[in-house]
Image (tube, rainbow, N blue to C red):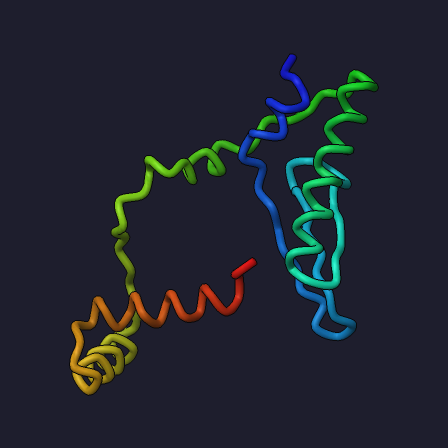
Length: 127
């Protein structure tokens, strides 16, 4: 059996849900049933989620409850597994539009797509 700190270091998947009506965020750990927390800001939600994860794991260890390991696909997110490349299929019309926009901006389509992806990702998921 692992220690609390060993379980805390495992790469359990976190799911973030924004409450657009009332504000705030909920973070859950799908592999740890019932382990979730909320916060008014992303930072608060994250800090609360880490506390909730620690308490969930501690209670499970104290009670002798089996703690599931992270899903195999979560392990794929190990930093050594990223090449910086992936293949993407898209409709021809989108391909054409991206090519036209990148040409208008004076950059390669690859640079333009990386720019669009990073801008969208930063807006939605930055903590």
